Structures are given as structure tokens and as C-alpha cells.
Image (cartoon, rainbow, N blue to C red; front, side, top):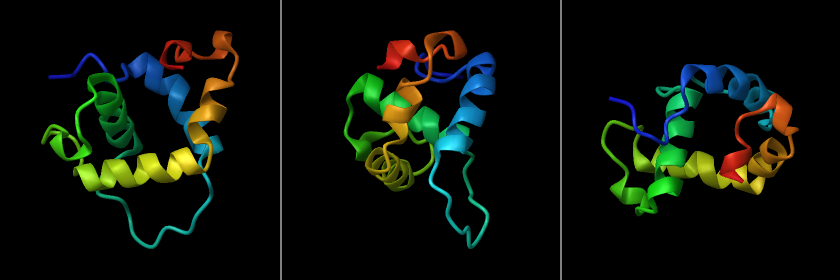
Length: 96
């Protein structure tokens, strides 16, 4: 069952290409066990609910994985770049 913080399909269709464009390019040694959408939904859940990272619900990727991505994306300025996308292109202005 989805959480209120989860991106719906229409939001993900907008969000995914923006995210892939903004994410720092890196060499991937092996395929990830988790999709970007699962990781983003874990980040949004934690930010909305204010729980400790280690208290992230078990149906999300492991909290260490979600936090690792959050920390690296934050350092790389990914969230600021996503928030700078004009509102008509994105439904995410309310997250800023």
C-alpha cells in the first residue's frame, strides 16, 4: 500500500527524466537492487514524517541505502536543481 509521501505514476513520469539528467554521472559497478523511485520514495517518507533514518519502514530499501543516496544527492545539489525547475514543468514545487 502506498504512503501519502510516495510519488504517483504521473509525478514519477515528470520526475524521473529530471532526476536522471541532474544526477552526477558515475561508473556503476553492478546493477542496483533498488530502483531510483524506491529510493526517492524512502527519502520523501523520511522527510515528511521526520523519523530517524534507522526507523525507515521495512518496505523501503534499507535505511543505509536511502540515507547514502540522500547524503550524496544533497551534497551534489540535486534537490536544489530539482526545485529550480519551473513549476509548469513540475508538480514538485510543494516539496520546496
